[in-house]
Length: 208
Image 1 (cartoon, rainbow, N blue to C red):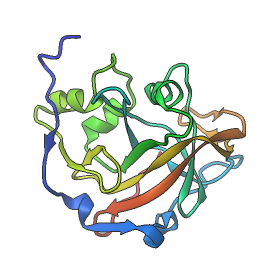
Image 2 (image 1 turned 90 degrees about the horizontal axis):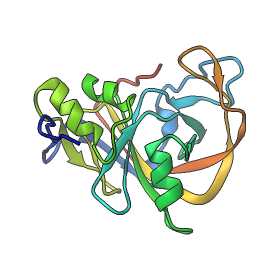
Image 3 (image 1 turned 90 degrees about the vertical axis):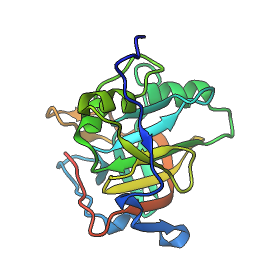
Image 4 (image 1 turned 135 degrees about the horizontal axis):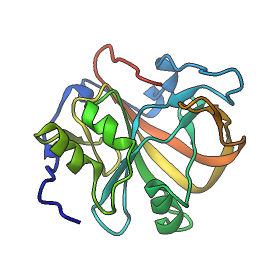
């Protein structure tokens, strides 16, 4: 893959997304106005337009994609992962050992170029961060997440950090997808356990 036009992210010490840092018992997803979008949804959809960050277990390749996240509780989310045609599914189903959780960060409200790229699969192992930087003509500023080994957008409104465990499942779905149909029947899906929430003062919650 020709990477000559890519612009990698720029690491910074801090950013607006670090204005508030919540860990442990302070983690509470109920603080955000998470809507029940459609009549037959299986639950409230917190992740409908957030960028989900994961890292390949055997390299530094950071993948970013949009994957739906349904509320289970104040610190758990259901996530739909497909092993066949998603990079996150490949990372999770093909690279994670039996008892090893996969680290995840979810950015909500961020650079428009990153939102655009999170919708589009790249040729692995190209990171969407590098192409988003090329689209905007300058690097995207990233900071280190608090509890997982991942970069997150320094200027995001909200970042949710956690882990997805290999053998844990809870019922998730169905959910109305953005083209206007209900995607995925209700079934046991992986669970994202939230470790930390960081957010701007008076953050804007974005969804679609």
